[in-house]
Amino acid sequence: MFQWRVVLLALLAVLLLVGGLSSLTVPNLQEGPVVYRFDEQHAIRALDILGFVLLLMGCAVVWSAGALWQRRMYAD
Image (cartoon, rainbow, N blue to C red; front, top):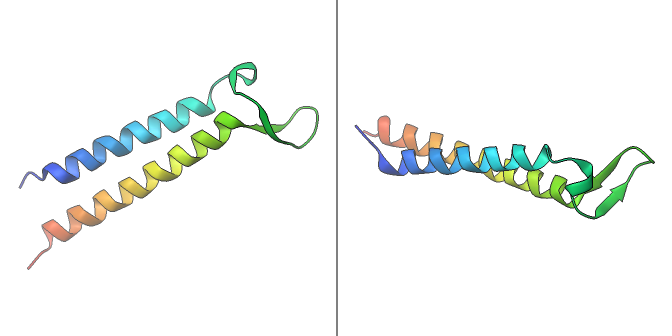
């Protein structure tokens, strides 16, 4: 039973997670403006927020792909 929707959702989830993780690994000089500064060494920048949002979206898509797969596999 090959489900195209599940495969496409899983592919989208992988792309979102890779995009989110790669935006979190960018050096500080290229991360954009400071959104919130904790102290001289720690700050939240624009790409940190983008990476966090992409990771949340990727997790939501993974969860929905799993729920769709379970619904299709265990449907009566």
